Amino acid sequence: MAENEPSFDAPIPGQSLTAELGGRPWQRPPQYNTVEEALDYYIPRLESEEVSEQIIDVLEMGIPVTNIADTMQTAGVLEGKHSLDVGMLILPVLVELIMLIADTAGIKYTSGLEKEKRIRGSLVDLAVAKFEEQKEKPDMEEMSAEEPTMEEMPQEAPIMPEENMQPSGGLMSRSM
Image (cartoon, rainbow, N blue to C red; front, side):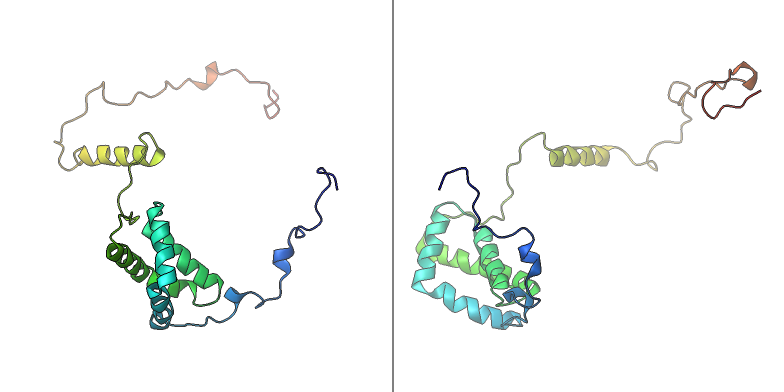
């Protein structure tokens, strides 16, 4: 087979939209309905030697704890273990358990909760700077009730009398 020939092993576009309703694990009722049940599923898995070693290996690569915990709970939702809202509720507990595993192993890790150094000049930084600038300006109530001078008042464009106006001759102009 030549390299330029198309592969017919690929899924048909839109095929994922044709699956039977309830045919996917996340479309069925979850296996664990409460936070307690979901934690009873995760805690023994995290305490196992095999999973702990894998977590330590991933943490040593520099992956933040929050990313690992989020990946675990998302996989649990996709497997139909628990619902998305239960996953969000157990997320802080998973983060703490993973940090406990790292502390017990004596490795340095990134929690993912630290404030990151942002690139200066980003839109977020510009918005924060503008907000701080607005905060530093005095409120209108604090300002004295001085009358604005002529230089401070906005200048308006002069109004031309109608007799000086020429018809434009455009599409919607009046015919005389």
